[in-house]
Amino acid sequence: MNFVGTRSLAISATALALLLALFVAFAPDPAVSQAALSCPGAAEQVFSSMAACGLKSTPGCFCYRGPNHWHSVYWLAVPVVLGLLAASVFRTRWYVALALLVASVVAGGIGSLVVLHELGKIDSVQLVHSAPGVLPLALLAGSAWGVSRLVWARITTRRGASAA
Picture 1 (cartoon, rainbow, N blue to C red):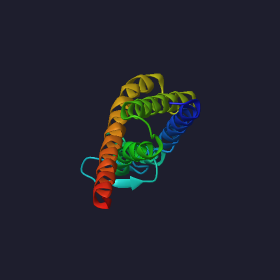
Picture 2: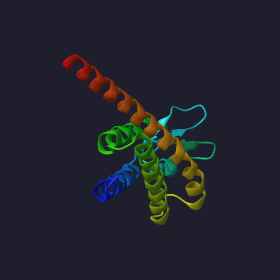
Picture 3: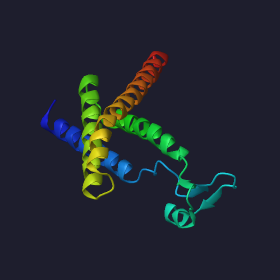
Picture 4: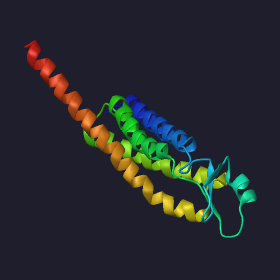
């Protein structure tokens, strides 16, 4: 591999890590923004925020926010998108491309968690507990990369065989 190819791969890996950092920065909140007030023996009331719900709360009642289902969809789609992008960008030996992809996703994931911590969006405990979650993200991205590489190899093999 020559210097120009190595430099191109490094730039691509850095761009992929920055893209993941952007994905993390704009990730949907795991809970919906609306809050529900639940009181025994009364109908549930919905408020625009937890603060508004807390103002109407009485003893024995509690406010809660339901899960945001787009949060799960988002975090299943992000690694797949990253893997497909990596398959189109990293044109080198498979083990070098896979190592670059995993390193990019881990670096981007950990880096974005540190930035979120510094911005005050997550505390130290959340930072420590979220860091291991970057590895499954990298593995899912690697799986998407591998499947797309296999499909591409199959398509090009068939094209070559039909041309002969």
